[in-house]
Image (cartoon, rainbow, N blue to C red; front, side, top):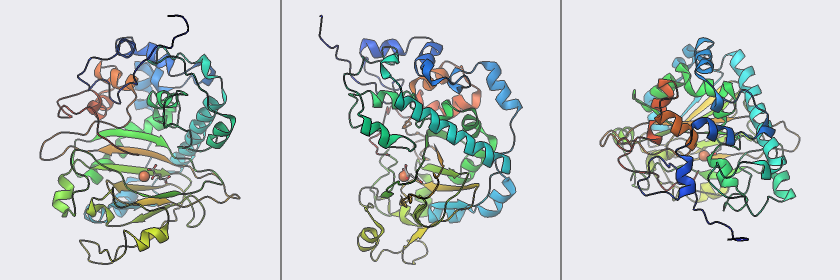
Length: 407
Ligand SMILES: O=C(O)CCC(=O)C(=O)O
Ligand SMILES: [Fe+2]
């Protein structure tokens, strides 16, 4: 009908896992060649010829053939202790990146941010919305909203999809979400044997899976991030204190925060954490807007369940080339960034394990549909297909398509 706007429901988080019949415009998307969908996720104006979502078999072979070390594994082994990691919920690994990795990682994060900024500035009517499974948005971001989001992460408003931001996030058109699909070095890291070895050490098992990947860029003037922790789903949240054996058996997530340029302890966008907080499994209660509120609230009188020492806030300061691994439920926050400081660069890679009791793996929070489709169709290297398996294998997820989560 002329003048009417076609109603299209939003794409489910993991469309290959849902059992209900999808609306035709969404169902179409899952049937087209992945090259067509990949092209729609990379509008011409982004001008990114190297984008891994458009790689051929030769490009994947080249990645494998040219891999260099990213970590000094002897430094990792020296600093990492599995039992401390399980009881602290954190492993702080200082200066473990090779000097070449520091250089390339920093460049990659800057480039990813440039792509994100470029998309924010350009004309979204040029985007092939139909192939992305929705109609042309009726609203645009305002000038202020765009300016506020430029140069940083998690700043684009997305409480609804009226301007199309949720769609651009889910499909990783916005490079801050799944930047490994935009920047070759970040894909190298995601699939790198040394990164995967680190995950196996942290999660304490051989079979590991990918969950999500983001840029976490904190520019001068960043206001700081409140205290929070992340849910796991699958019935493992808000269940009260767990002992270490019970904790290890859960379908845990490992958030890996990679800081190629590090940060200082104060007003530099640095990470703050509370060792032992994860064992309380309390993402609903363990929240606070400031350190003071945390100290007077959730933290007051709490003891580490293993060491029996009072829980306390730590403000980290990290040299370049450092990585922080953070187990599910572990409380963390981010310091503000002063106006006269340089941007803090970070990329987050989140991996996870199965529930030891059921064997099930939680559905991923953010594998873009085109990557799930490539994985299911056998278009990716075997390791990537296995890492992405929870995005398409209903048996592995125990029939779950998503879990209610806040990131
Ligand atoms: O920016 C950081 O260092 C951490 C951000 C964070 O905690 C999050 O995105 O959940
Ligand atoms: Fe977080």
